[in-house]
Length: 330
Ligand code: A2P
Picture (tube, rainbow, N blue to C red):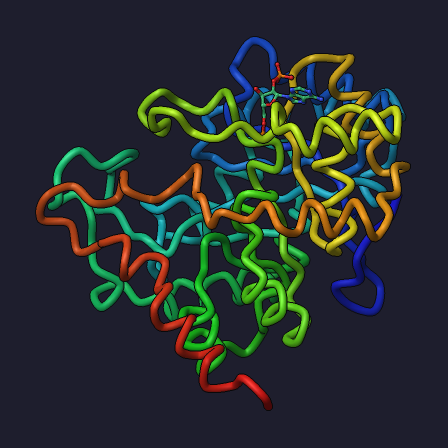
């Protein structure tokens, strides 16, 4: 399996199993099957409300000798209700307890968004706290402390703009190893890709298959289909591969990590085999022009009336655009 180096002795497998939307009652078997098939990277989060079941699968899989802990890469994320210096340690310990692990390979800030204490998902604007009140730099320092204690090997972020990465760089002692963001042919984010390459930050692509099983509230009418896209279909037929394999191979060709979710044994197998599919320059060029800057997970759920978060200050797209503009020709 291809992997990307994060430090001298450590590299992250280019393909992992996503577990967002993997329901309780089926995720344990899915993770167990994935380990049997050869997956060595599992992407988790307490927000997915299934870590305890994943922990059971990891314990069983490791106990059965499917792989060693050292051969396995486990990522989890700090949920939005646990930002702030005094809350990170307890949140991480709860995740380690649920996953039945002594340490994580990677711990990410799930969103640059803060909830009030005790809120699992916000219903009113007051449930959300501004970053000026609970700054990322304080939460990050707490993640750095967890790393010092050996509870996590690497730390990183999700859903961060270039602006927020630049701000973090001003105070961080340890730079983020990873930024996990939505990436697929309809949302290619070339500026972020260039930026992260230059800074040595690995990008992980979430929703690489278009997350067709995301909640109805996250869907808009007449959204374009990724798995059903005619160009993806043509390239798949050319290589006698599936559309999902083309999407995943494209992500890996860009040196991003892909974390497709499946709970189906056949599709788990198919997705892992995407690591063997090599697209050619013509395929990459045809996919390259499909970008529509279309977000499937657009963050509008953090915008309840009275919330300090807007799509403009969440994604910072205008700031990032100007940042690139100023450096054009450098
Ligand atoms: P299932 O879990 O039943 O396999 P994403 O990773 O972008 O969030 O997409 C996950 C969705 O894609 C799920 O609905 C998942 O269904 C489906 N899926 C996963 N692998 C494949 C595949 N190889 N072909 C078609 N659909 C897939």
